[in-house]
Amino acid sequence: MQGKRITPEQGTVYRNKGGGEFLCIQGFDGDAIMQNTVSRWTFKAHGVTQYEDGTVEWDYSTRGHFERSLKRCRLCDADFDFSTLIINQCGGEWTLGLRGGVISNISDEDRVYFCPECGRKLTDEDFRGKGGRKK
Image 1 (cartoon, rainbow, N blue to C red):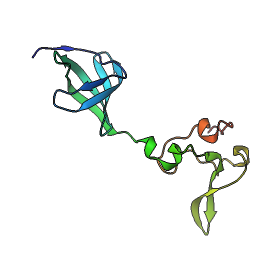
Image 2: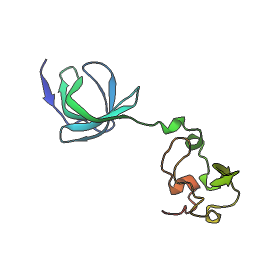
Image 3: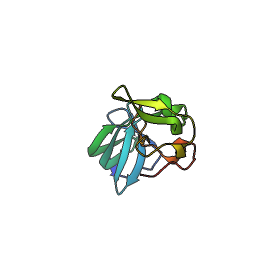
Image 4: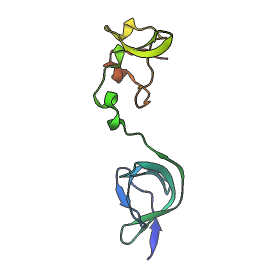
């Protein structure tokens, strides 16, 4: 079966010639960042070829990794207000705690910069858009 080189289109799901479906995250110059729709294995596919039946394959891949699913994080998925979360020292050990008030009441040393459950870097939106502090 004859194939031709393509640059996959962002947002399009392609069926691999060997099986499985892959979402194109970003396509550029015959290569693409692809993600398996089931396992979330994400990689850069080099030299993508599409065949007459619509299936695709690539010459080789690099930078393969599993993407974290933010929807599996109880804090991020619940739209948790991180402005109440601080780091405390209790009984000689460091722990996470809750504090009432607003983000401006939390010192830089108490500030939480990453979600303690999934590790995602937090943004101002995670602090209810109340001007979270910059590093």
